[in-house]
Each structure stands twice: as C-alpha cells, then as structure tokens.
Image 1 (spheres, one colour):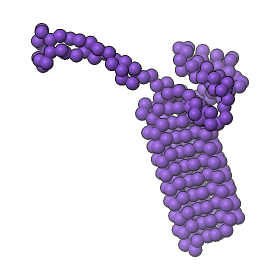
Image 2 (image 1 turned 180 degrees about the vertical axis):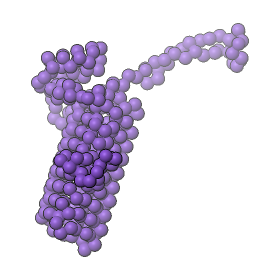
Image 3 (image 1 turned 60 degrees about the horizontal axis):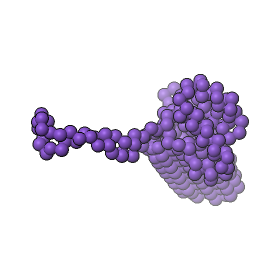
Image 4 (image 1 turned 120 degrees about the vertical axis):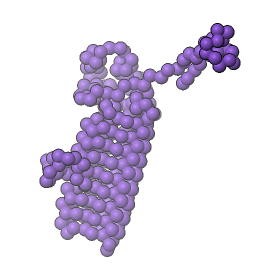
Length: 290
C-alpha cells in the first residue's frame, strides 16, 4: 500500500493490498477499496462506496456524492463498483436515493472525462462512456455499449447491450440492444453490425437479428402484434434478448430514422424577380438530398 502523506484517509476505511493513493485524495469512512486500485491526486471517495480490484481513478474524480434529488432526506444508498474500471478526470458517480438501494457499475468500463453517473443507475460491463456523457437517475446500461460524447440520457431509460449511440444524442426513450443511434437526430439508423462482429456473433446470428430488426421497425404491425410475433418466433436464440428487452419497456423505444433521399424544387427560368410577371416560366427538377 502506498499513501501520499498529503492524502486524508479515514482510519475506518478498508484499503486492500497494493493500493496507491495520491496527493490530496480524501477517503471517508465506510469505504472499501479493493486490491491493486490506483487513485491519482485529488480523488475523493465518499462514504458508502465499495470498490473492487484494479480500478484506476484519475485526477478530480468524485465517487459517492449524495443524489441530486430534492426528495433526499437523511441517509441515502450506496455505490458498488466492480473490477478493472477506468475513471478519467472529473468523473462523478452518485449514491442511490433510498438507503436500501445501490448505484452499480460492473467490470471493465471506461468512463472518460466529465462523465456523470446519477443515483440508482445500473451500468453493466465493457462499456465506454465518452467525454461529458450524462446518465440521469435510474438509467440502465447493458454490456459493450458505446455512448458518444455529450450524450444525455433521460432518467429511467434503458440502453440495451451492444448499442452504439452517436455523440450529442438526446435519449428520452429506451434504446434496444444491437442498434446504432444517429447523434444528430437521436433516432435508430440500423444494426450495430461492426460491434456485433467484434463481439463474436456469427453471420447466421446477425442474419436473424436483421429479421428481428425489420419486424420491429419496418413491418407496419401494431406494437401488440410485434410483441406477439417476437414471443412466438424469437423467444430463444439470437433474437431472445431483443424480445425480452422490448417486452419490458415502460417508456417506449426510440424510433427508426427515416431519411428523405429526393425532393422537388421549382425554379424560375426568367431572371426577372417580379413574382407576378406572367412571362416567368416555371420549371420543376428533382434533386438528391441525402
């Protein structure tokens, strides 16, 4: 164990083997830090936080702040963090609202500069949260999700595994697993095929997921009809995770993006700018816009 003499570590905190704590860090009581963790300078771990092994906290991270919620009175919940996570500069993670509840972050996640994980969030494994990502309260993130820079996620939304969300997207409904979301529109623009291949999904599994995608977004069926067909045809196998995710949604799901590929323009052949000139000849052309 290596503790800088300028750090403040409460005597009741439980510090594991080979932990490095840098200058001006503050470790409060009721904290557990697992073996091999590294805390750079100015890291604050507040009470009610349990941290696993080999986590790295960069300068300015604050873990364990009280929930940003007006209803919080007295004691609040805790935070549980798994193993091998990286928290870059100025990360904030808040405790759960209720004393019996937990904000959870799993294993092997990479949280980049200024990312925020609010109270009662549940973040899985192998996720990447790029700079300035904001997770509202009670947000659930699956596994191998990539959230682009400055993505804002509304409270109680869920993001399914292997989803990829473009930077600046505003997420106000659930994002199903395996899809890509366009940052500009905040709409789904297809399957995350690169992510699926990198995760080891076979060509046949991806083909089945394409069938599920077309059923959900392009079949024209009602929501009840979609859920019924998913339950009948895709309750097991590669489509089962999508089926279970959609059946459990409470906020609805993000819609698919629909692009306009062509449009019509009406042009005046005469240079005369008088709109009432009867000699003006109107000509219509079609142009590609996307």
